[in-house]
Amino acid sequence: MSGGTGQERRPYRAPRGIRDVLPDEVPLWERLERTASRLARARGYREIRPPLLEETALFTRSVGEVTDIVEKEMFTLERGEHSFTLRPEGTAGIVRAYIEAGFPKNAPVQRLFHIGPMFRYERPQKGRERMFTQFDVEVLGSLDPRLDAEIIQLAARFFEELGLTRLEVRVNSMGDGADRDAYRAALRAYLAPRIQEHCDLCRARFERNVLRVLDCKNPACQALHADPPRLVDHLSAENGEHFESVRALLADVGRETVVDSGLVRGLDYYTRTVFEVHAPELGARSAICGGGRYDHLVRDLGGPDVPAVGFAIGFTGTLLVLRELGLLADVAVEPARAFVVAATEGLEREVFRLAEELRAGGISAIYDLEQKSLKAQMKAANKGGHRYAVLLGADELARGAVQVKDLQAAEQNEVDRAALVAALAE
Image 1 (cartoon, rainbow, N blue to C red):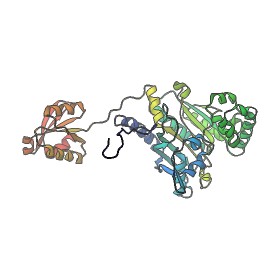
Image 2 (image 1 turned 45 degrees about the vertical axis):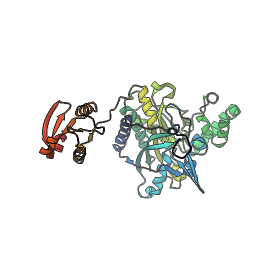
Image 3 (image 1 turned 120 degrees about the vertical axis):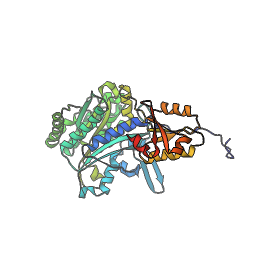
Image 4 (image 1 turned 90 degrees about the vertical axis):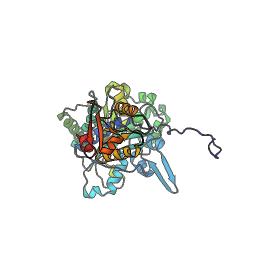
């Protein structure tokens, strides 16, 4: 029993679907973060860090009420009359920040990227967690088809940099304005005769937002609408030209695309170009990234009618893909450069001071905390992969010197303490 509480002690665990990233795994995550940041910055994107918590209405308005995210998956907090939600996706918060910062008026074209956690209350399964890290790229302020091609190329390059060589880029156009309305009418006419055979969710979506019917994951429903009308057949001349320009631009840089008329991104804000990157080797789970244009979301969230395009990549799924394809090489945690060894008992304070001197000079250093013998300390230094063992004994302390052993070259020399940092830096 715990002291005076009357409650039985139990071990605490992370909430279901939320896990720790332990020290041995961190280098793998850092590899993804470095790759994402490097590729984005090379194209002029600047990092933005929006908050984890936003007003619930932001996501209801942007993502759409007739979506699984809003209907089933949001972590929402109620405080008095206020409702806040942990962000389930990154675009809405970035657009909100773009408007609030005054960018539409002062500097409308913004290339932005973000790496951080998202939260969705869904059933945890392989590659899908309730807290997950996402790499978001957003370009706001231009309808130029070169931006569509640029972000598709960036998404594909991210995976290629990690070792995936057999990628398939699937594209479609969601249209905009009158052609979108014409497609909705055609899709409604196609679905209407058999809509009652669909699931309850599909029937509700048919009434509220017919495009979402195509998002249903129920195999029986998918079979009922296996050959829907093609959105690209309803595009206006302007939107059709935009779509073909995107494909041509990608072809110019050697990126072939496949038109997938069934590709309808699952959030309400998408317009014109939508895309997914696939790894065909994964079979039915081949989709590894998706995105597209959202040319009216800025307007819908209270700003001017400014076009935009972006994508998101989940790191959990990416690591799973790399592991399955044998591309997840172990990345070792880099050990401290120096292991400070107490060669004589009673020098704990001096060892601490010496380690701090090294750290102040830019040399990473650690020391024994278990009162091990000299032999055991040297064994720990070797086993830990440290480059140098810095030995301090009573005689060395009196002379103002240390013994430095290069553990790779198996060479040992006495070094003046005042010259130690420079010696190890070399």
